[in-house]
Length: 549
View 1: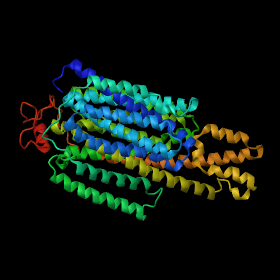
View 2: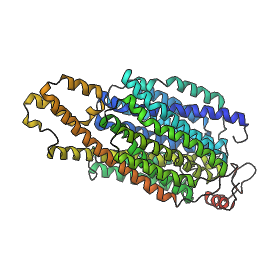
View 3: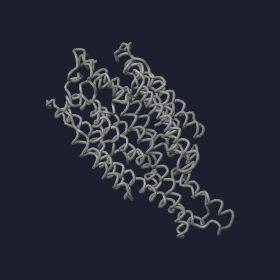
View 4: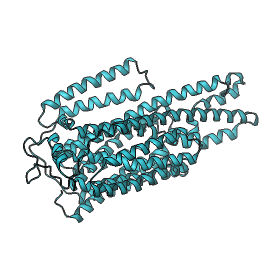
C-alpha cells in the first residue's frame, strides 16, 4: 500500500484511527466506572478477572490474526474485530452478575486484540519506518485522548446514569468506524502460496490459556504450590514444547522462531513484556486509591487521572515528530523509562489528591516518550513480508506482560491487604466486634470488606442510618480500612516501579539501527520481496551499515 497517494493514505489513517478510538474509549471509560460496577454487581474477589479475561482473549486474538493478516490482508480482520467488540460491549450492558460481565468482556477482548494487531500493522503497510515515527506518535495520542475523556465520562455516567450506558454510549461510533473501514480501506489479494498453521495456532492457544489462568488463580483462588496451579503450569509447558516443535516443521508458522534470532526483536519484546507487567499491574489499582482511600467520586476520579493522559498525548505527538525527523529512537526510551519509574515511586508515597495528580503528570510524560519506541524498533528490523507477525509478537508479549502483571499484583494486593487488616486488628486500631452487643456487631462486621469503600453513596447511606453511639466506631472502622488499603497499594506501586527499572536496564542493551526511508529491505528485488537468504538477522546487519538519512 506504500504506492497509494498521500491523500488516500490520510483517509485510510482516519478510518484506522476511528476504529482505534472506538476500541480505546470503550476501554478507558470502563476504568473509573469499574469499581462502582463491581460494587453494584458484587464479586470483589473477581475484580481482576474483568480485566484479565479481556487481556487473555485479546492476547490470543492478536497473535492468531498477525499471521493471517499477512496472508489475507488487514481489512477483513479489522472489520471482524469491530463486530466482535460491539457485540461484547452490547452484552456487557446487560450483565446481571460478575460472571456474565467477565464472559462478555472476553468477547470484547477478542475484538480489541484483532483491532489493535491490524491497526498497527496497517501503518507499517502504508508508511516506511522513517515516516512511522510521527504516525505512531499520532496513534499513541489517540489512545491518550481517549484516556483524557474516557475516565471522566465513565465516572459521570455511574454517578448520574445507569452503569449500563458505560458500555453502550459509544456503540454508534463503532458503526461509523465499521463503514469507514469498509469503504476506505483497500482490499489485498490473498497470497496463494501461503498455508495456515492450524496446529500451531491451537497449541499456542493451549499454552497461553493455562499459563494466564495459573497466574490469575495463584495466591487468590489457590495457593501457589497447590495441585491445580502446578498442573496448569505443567499443561502450559507441555503445550509450549509441542508448539515449538510444530513451528520448526511447518511451511508457514504462526509465530516464526527465526524472528527471535534477531536480537532487536527479542530484546524489544522482553522489554515490552516487563514494562507492561509493571505498568498495567500497578495502574489498574489507581482508582482504588482515588476512590477507596481518598473517598473521591468516580466522576472526579476521572479528573485525577486526566493529567496523565494529557501529558502522554502531548509528549507522544512531539516525540513522534522528532523520531521521524532525526531517525533516532533509543534515546527517547532511555529518557522516558526513568521518568515513568519516578512517577510510580511518587505513587508509592502519595497521601493526597495533589500528589496523585503530580505522579500522573510525571508518569504520563515518561509514557508518551518511551512507549511508542518499541513498536518502531521491531518493525524496522524485519522484512515487510513479516510485518504482521512481528507486530503481533510485540502485542503478544505486551499483553502477556500486562495480564501476568495484573494477576501477580492482584495476588500482592490481596495478601498484603489481608495482612494489614490483621495487623490493624491486633494492634488495637480496629474494632473488636465480639465485645459489642450482637445487633451492633452484625452491623459492623460488614466493614471488614474494603469493597464498601468503592461505593460512597452506599457508605453514606449506612452511616446516616446508624445511631449516634455507633458513629465514632463506624468512622474508626472506615479509617482502619482506608489505612490498610493505602498501605497495600503502596506495595503494589513499588513492585510496579521495580519492573520498570528492569525494563530500563535492558534498554541499554537494545541495538539501534537507522530507520529506513522505504519499506524495502536492503538486498530486496524490485517488488519489495526479500531475496533468497535475506533473513531478518542479515537485514539487521545491512541496516547497521546503512547511514542515517
